Image (cartoon, rainbow, N blue to C red; front, side):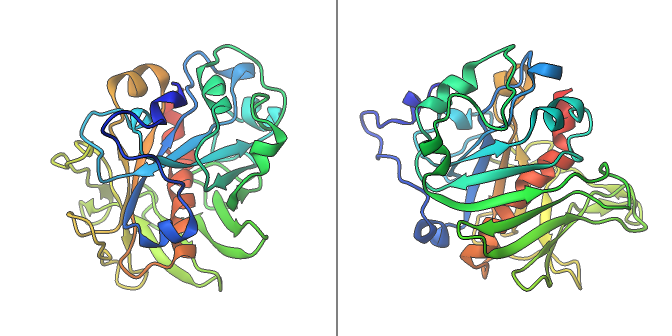
Length: 296
């Protein structure tokens, strides 16, 4: 993948940085992995980078990485030991994802094309110290935890802003319905703000996939944003009408060969900008805790 694809072409609007003011006006976005993981297992496993782009022009089966509307990016910082020796238990690793509001640097395209190379440092050697520190708006981080599915020290992702202020966090929830993946989202006061959970069937014992979704959502498992007390889905200003974190079909090459995932994040109608940043972290935790295993 080359970030030259994100540059303006004839007839396209120029890409815009996903600043806090712009994020505050957005109802939805796509959080997509940019690092390709083909032939990158074991000692060759790299840190995983992401890009953020508008969701309004995403089409079923399209490649979100070709979009000219990428407006932000996220780089991962995780040690060689955590990436390689906990590769088969991705929900366990200690890591942090640094969220930038600027356009992705061109050097990231080099990192995303590499194959069968060993990354011994926490971050990619292709990213300069200046690029790693520029325009940081949030950091999503976690310590080492138990595996997903356990009820002791479950995976989480804590979100702080660029100045270290606590914004909230997402935690994997363990309860009597152990086969239903679910998360709670805390606000800046550590109060439970949202519940992320798919629809269920069989008296709440099985998840209920959706097979008629639009925008890359055919045969997907939406994690709906719910009221934590009533479990009712919360509304969003999108055509589906429900806030959610949903894995998308990101194109045959990305799904089958490059093993890159993409997620649609639809924000609740009353979500603050800080809460939107926390929900971006929620989408990454959903991937780390459950879907990153698909790369194996």
